[in-house]
Length: 156
Image 1 (tube, helix red, strand yellow):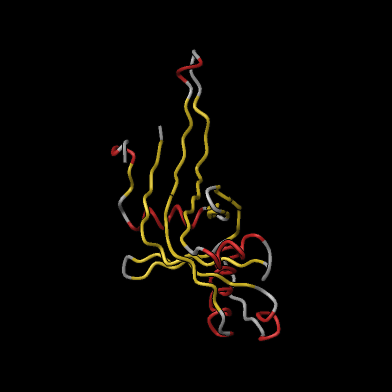
Image 2 (tube, rainbow, N blue to C red):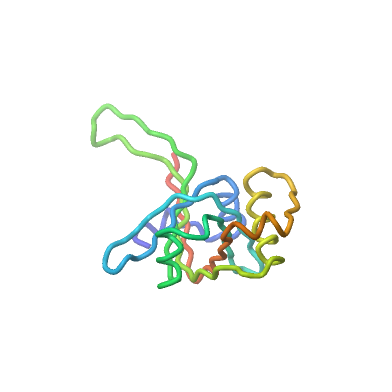
């Protein structure tokens, strides 16, 4: 990381950023062209390993690309604040962000899809939900096993 003075290494601080964000941007490859989509997510961190869950339609460009190549990159950011100055070059922007790479697995088992949806909804709403077999039958649930993750903060 070029700006090591802004790097965040503390798992607690990284989780605070992940907790604060509700949308992440998922980047996939379409041949030689990147394809980026914003999605809601949920996550878990166990023993220093991060796992991100998201859901989507069972068919479409995103799922086609993930079936071809499950290696992805993602980004999320929060704590946005414009900092002002007397001159244009003195302006800045405060933020906290996480960028990572990982491998996507499209979940197929009903129980693992329910678990992923439960994690996602807990993150998004703070509430615990239960899902029926019927509800999970008509949605794709994906799990990203994070292989690399960096976090950064620019603050006053």
